[in-house]
Length: 238
Image (cartoon, rainbow, N blue to C red):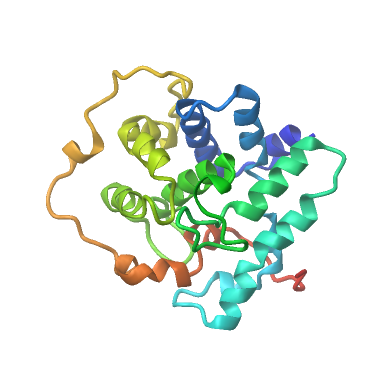
């Protein structure tokens, strides 16, 4: 049932994220069944965002304490909506909903899990989704360059993101970019190393850092992955 929903409701961004998640999960050694569970859950793990008012989603500046609290509750709202169903697949999506904003260093939310206490699926999805969101046009800002998006991922290794997964992702960045491209269909299961040169070798000129990178300001902004979602105003479900 969850796989059917994924086929029916996957947006272009979810298709791109799904392709990168499949690739990263394969390289990380996940079992095929667990990988497919991740892919199937992608359209559902952020379902808790229906509880966040549109005014907060579209805000371009930093969130105040009240707004930040409302936004952060979407993880628990989503988990409550998905848990307790008869399908094990929905239980898996509920775990992703609850844990996809936990940080590797324990400073995320809602439970401040750290390192390997964060489910591997949530770590993979968070990384792929963040990169795609940063490198894509979105409601409250333009896309970052590939270089800046990749550098953000590298700098946040060990803080936001699993450092082992970050290394795997960046070492394989040419394939990840191919998977994101329109019509890009390389085999995401291919473990071969015959890819183009490492991403860092292809950079030209100085990197221009987005101001949001300074001092962890992204932690107090609307997540770029959330800001691109057309979520209508709804009653607060929390």
